Image (cartoon, rainbow, N blue to C red; front, side, top):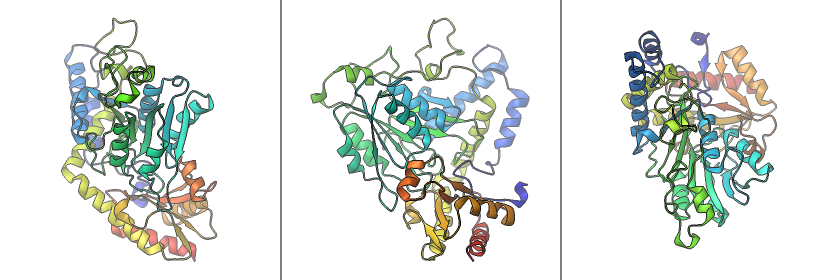
Amino acid sequence: MSDSLIYFDNAATSFPKAPGVNEAMSKFLAEDAANPGRAGHRMAVAAEQMLDGVRLKLTRLFDCDDPNRMVFTLNGTDALNMAIKGVLGESGAPEGVHVITTELEHNSVSRPLQAMADRRQIELTHVGFNEDGFIDPDDIRKAIQPNTRLIVLTHASNVLGTIQDAAAVGAIAREHGVLFCLDAAQTAGVLPISVKDLNVDLLAFPGHKSLLGPTGTGGLYIGERCPPPDKPPDIFPGMPADRGASSLVDEASRFNPWREGGTGGDSSTPTQPTDFPNYLEGGTPNTVGIAGLGAGIDFINRHGIDNALAHEQALVATLIDRFADDERFTVYGTRDAKQRVGTVSINITGYDAPDVGSILDDSFGIAVRPGLHCAPYTHRRLGTFPDGAVRISPGVFNTSEEVDQLIEALGQIAG
């Protein structure tokens, strides 16, 4: 089927995967598919070495310091739940804690935070965005309260593709002694990311999108301002002196485990061992998927992140230039493709988004993603709720000829 399908749904998951991913997974299954760290035999050691190797690749890719703080997760949603509930507690933070997020967020952020707010375990502020699809970092600054503990921001909208000013938000968070969690679901692997330059405390990402790995993979980097509970700092790093070493500071300096269970390094303690990455990696990891993820990262390093971004932006620019001034179409977000990753959402006058998606699939062999894209706050603000929009997300392996075919198909549908 893939031979006859033009795939423009890379914002959901990339396809095809990078050269070498299938081979790496097959080789691992054939040769080293033991349980890492759970035994001393050569296969278990080889599996553990593979994990450590991919952990180091990710640490270098995102300009991190400590590979042990690079924790493997099941996907981006898992990583975000791990980050949010690690900071706030699985059942919610102490009463009165305040969290800031935005109306651009995926449900992976919005749902766990809203559930805590509904239980009155946190106070929650949603910052809006302008007609071009950008949040104003100063709006986040204005939303900070004395009890604000966490800011959660998407690096790029999964609906609009708009790249947010994470550096400015990170600087504001650090200035006010607030933890900063960045959702890099749409940027990891296609946009250069430095946790140091962006002042990111928690970096959450999937492995199956622009990192070009298989589904069931992802990661969370936990910065030094998020120690495990038995190793709290004397004072929350970066906390202004006038906030003092309050109970809020003490609580904010502890990070809670999202899942607990077996680890290879310590089977003796009655509770989860507090050394990273074991503290957050209870249970057997998706070793075969991580082997594939490592091959995806290798491809990215060879191909170049800047080259991938420029390629996707050029394809998006072609789409925006074609449809932005055509009264039959509505294009959402900025017209400047240089401020986007490879994502653009549109609607056709007189058609519901799901119908357009079905016609493209059935009649033209083109895959897109119609609907709400797990981002209802974004679509409500755009005025596209409840039907949503048609999201087109070219990837590194799409061609300009495929974009031309999509443009022709959409033109025929619009009439």
